Image: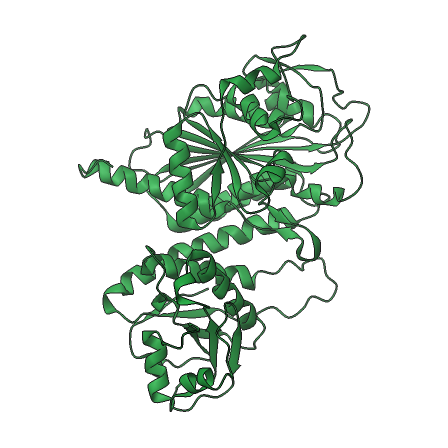
Length: 508
């Protein structure tokens, strides 16, 4: 998808559709005012006569507009001016692009960088335009015998009223395009059924990503024999009941000038299907357990975005992939396993398997002497009870890292919420028979799951993102969301900027 920038009079834009945001008060933004002047006050009259209600997310397509070089004009409601914040801005974008995706057009021009959003600059608004375009145009219909026609839209011109904002708009469009592609990668991996997307399939996708990166990404796949030699018995225990072999996938991107610069590490939970194992889940909505690898999918999506943006950082992406199935070889409640770190774990519930694959992956990350480690996992239903489907749960052993992730989430509009990781919660994991148990009971389930992981993250700054409530939607709109690719990519871009500032003597 292309996102060129135009600073000339929007009335001169030769495009299939001009997209113009409008507030309810009728006070037109700069681009809309110029279009209104040359179109015999078309926009103003539509608002004054009540032909267009500029309530938030309302869309009106005008098939012909006099005085314009565009074939069509689309008005998009922004609602009340004093209520136009990030959420409203993104809602208007989603409404516009949903309507545009249904039109038989391949190019448009949009004037959303004019919209005043408090403390948000032109590059942020351009980035949100690009991400919304990818979101609306995404389709997952590869298993349909007769898929619907694909949207034709491929060129989105960003209309900028101030010449000085042109470069910022280009940069925002570039970042948004990369993140949009990364989100689409994550959504597709999440939406794939468990009979296609297996641990071996994820390993193949990593290798394909490496081959396509022209040397920018190196990939190592540890199979079950390698994991056995390594001593990753916790990861292996989860996949023991499956016909699908487990994998540890390691992708390495070196963007910093020095190969020795400490990398940032992302660790994704890749349970490609989760029956619960011997602690079998109820049948209702079990099909959605194909989404239990969305943490891994978000790592793939973030790597996709990083390869497009090429930030000057070092990154290691680790995916712990297994399928949790019940059979005669499966781990049983009460079994005791030995982790890669050497700690023993009493498995009280085989449906608390994500932490069992992640703990070995976190231990594996120690060898990279990382600057930070962030794991991403659909880990606990308790996260949905606590935060619903809007915020990702965040827990960390380092307050600065937690604040960096919270800030990145705010910038990316892919927000997280910080939960406590106090020592008092650790005692819930006490076991009579092993070093620790894999569950801590019903109280504070999200926190005790993170407490478990913290035992394996004592060598580096570490944070855990519980995306159980944000990784996918249920019901009529069932499907993977692509979160938190935006947050993770922004976090990495912020680390690049932080390093640049320190090198320039402007320590943050």
